[in-house]
Length: 163
Image (tube, rainbow, N blue to C red):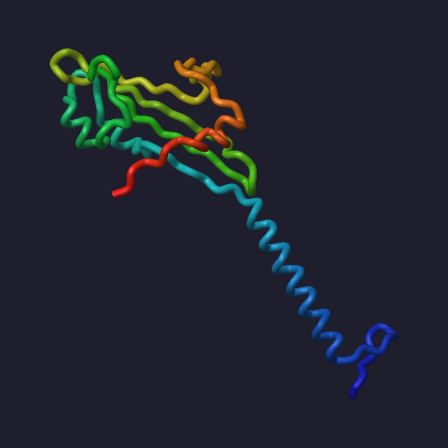
């Protein structure tokens, strides 16, 4: 076996190979861990095309022309179809954390009675309001079964007829 000297110590050739493999394994592990920290971007909804939006002018385009430029809307007004909403949302997720909302934009196109664009507006994330959901439960009729009633409730009941 041939021994080599390195910095005053004697090192066998197979020991150098082991050190090299450990260093490469450590680098690969560090690269995998760092890749997990890269945020993943999620785009949902309408993808805005600034050129197509610039072509829409109030008093000129109709609903059909807007639909051909932007596509169908994300939502239409609940009680009337005079407002079209194009909703886009972008969020980022890093590793195992919950997604973080980065950008949220709603383009509102209002139409007049004849179906021509009356107004175009935009609502951004800064202008949005949080809506608190009701935490109450809806009461139901009937009785609540306890643990043992649920567990032993079918004992003694006749079985359903088999065919």
